[in-house]
Length: 157
Image 1 (tube, rainbow, N blue to C red):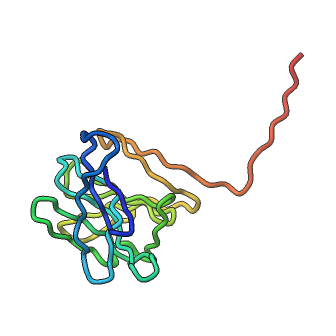
Image 2 (cartoon, helix red, strand yellow):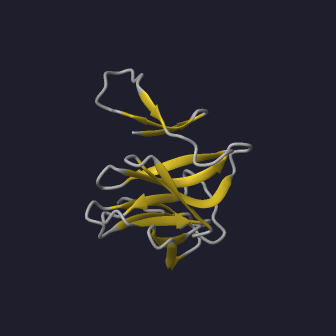
């Protein structure tokens, strides 16, 4: 399990007895920069997420990955144009190949090649948020915010 608190990003072993007391705190990627992880790679060896400035908790326009084996970060600055971060709306998640990420940011869906440090916009629709990926990576689930809706009235006879 991944958590984020005043100490930074922490990883918990969920097999430990409750209440959880043993945590591993990840190092900071850079001075004044924290890592807000949101996804484990399929092999459990890497994390992906966004950078957050410690001074005011605003988002750094960067996608970050962290290797638990090498204990090193990869910082992909400006890989998503005009990146913003809302933990309830924007998601960065690993694809099963361990090389690419799928990200939704401001209604835009990107595939990010971590090794090539490049992204490709695959879909853009204002109002889209949250993204969940099926285990086989074939399907994604998205939510859409609408400012208006239909009201239906039915009578039972």
